[in-house]
Image (tube, helix red, strand yellow):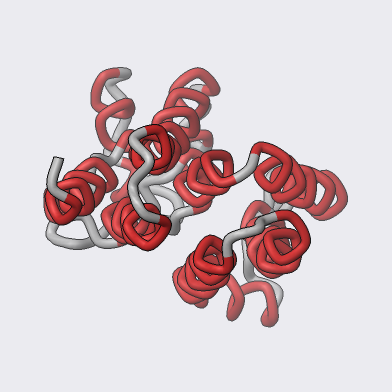
Length: 196
């Protein structure tokens, strides 16, 4: 497969929103119209359907993992693998199928990290779990994991290109959480088990 086609295919795969598709399959409201308005697993969970949230999480993570894993499996150049990783992530953030209005990228980024290194993904996930368990803020947990991920990547990944990709994905993820950052700072962010 031509390298450019592989990158484009990754973007198109990233543009599939499992939050929207799963919610529709379960007869739930479009996640873009409720809660935070984000079509991700956390907002789907606010519907009360844990299975729907789990399927959203797995779907968004899998679409981040699959194209990067395939690019590595077919021994594409590291540079191409990096573009594939960025493309699938941008597809989730700015999906062509949904007028370029997508999610914040937490699960998809985790999938990319998993393809780069299971240990890297595990450390990022552990960071998320610890912060969420302590604070009940999914956004703060995601921001913490994003802030730590480049450091983990620097320690674990031998390819400088992959490290740069992790840094770029982390910056984009933090940028997509800018409204959450404002709410965290002014105390209006809604956490699970907390009154907003």
